[in-house]
Amino acid sequence: MSAVRTVDSRRQKKAEAATAVGERLEEFGREVLAEATNRPAQMANGGLYLRGLLEEGRRKSLEPLVCRLGGEADYQSMQQFLTDSPWDPTAVVRAVAERVVPAIDVEAWVLDDSGFPKDGVDSPGVKRQYSGTLGKIGNCQVGVSVHAVGPKGTAPLGWALYLPEEWCEDAERRAKAKIPAEVTFKTKPELGSELIERAAGWEIPKAPVLGDAAYGENSDLRRRLHTAGIEYVFAVGPQLAAFAPETAFEVPERKGGTGRPRKRPQPDRRPESIAALVKRLGPDHAQTVAFRDGPAGEPDTSRFLFVRVRASHEWQKRPSPPPEEWLIAEWPEGAEEPTDYWLSNLPEDTEPERLARLARLRWKIELDYRQLKGELGLDHYEGRSYLGWHHHTALVTAAHGFLTLERLRPTARRPA
Image 1 (tube, rainbow, N blue to C red):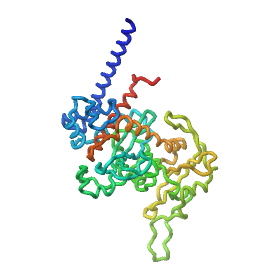
Image 2: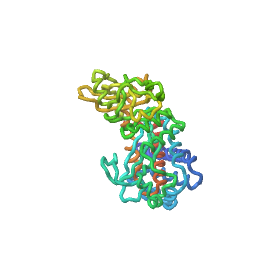
Image 3: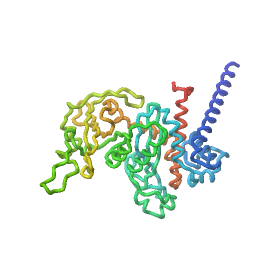
Image 4: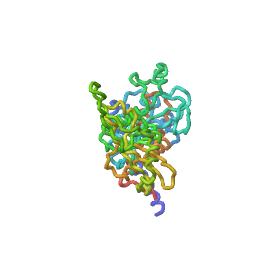
């Protein structure tokens, strides 16, 4: 009998725990949907969709999600809520971020993009284009996103669906996908910059922005972030040109007594590729840096060069010399040349350990994508509505945020 009572007691505790989680989810859903929705039906459908994303099931697209919810959800009402209802997805993402980001000890924001494989040609933004998810060119949508990352977790800060130029210029396809008239063509770096600047205005901890070379080599993006006072550590390719640290910029004297006075400072030498610059300095200028890296923050060491340079892209158009930046080059012991390069506008007195850790931290974005896609169905949206895509990503963000907060609860069970 004692064994039976023990089993019954465990079942009761499990049922009570599940009830408590359900109650916390309902409260969380009301909180993050409050600013975005203005109708009771929107709030109700949002809470149901959020619950459906978190329930067990291989597919998190609308039809199987509604089926799992049973008689509580009406398919037509849920479809209208997802694809057409005028609630603000950004307000949901902000509400989630302002609850989750302070809890994860943020170290960096990561700017990235991801492919969403699609069949057909009618989903907004779909075309044959490169997808990191596929590792090749394929029929897909591409979403640009920004994520806060820290030792206690990650949190999406915004999503933007990339629309190729041919989509923006095709009135018929725009109408079918319900793309708003004010949406115009923007490059992925432009979309990323807008997401970063928007999140920078929220009540969340700020951190340096990380990104791969597709973003780091975009001088307009770096300039825009620097002007906005936002720090970054971006990967760049070895061919990027820069002025060496010994370069002097001076305003040359005017020629003759009647020539127009010169105003723009001129460098006393030509720029060179960062690969050539680092090779000229040689591996003897590298220093061994110890920092924490890896999924569990394991200690790691490598050799890096840290050089103050000025990127030379369109320097002739500037009224003053380009700003100084950190050039970071990882040159492992025994390697014939550096393996990776980064540019950063962090202050000149930044510790080498911090520069190295930030340079190597971008891998954490994979934690977000793994859970967002594998568990929560980020790439399961099957609708053909531009707004619907953003609604789905916002609700997936909310589901992800709830799971993060549940994991961080003081009473949460730890894995054995």
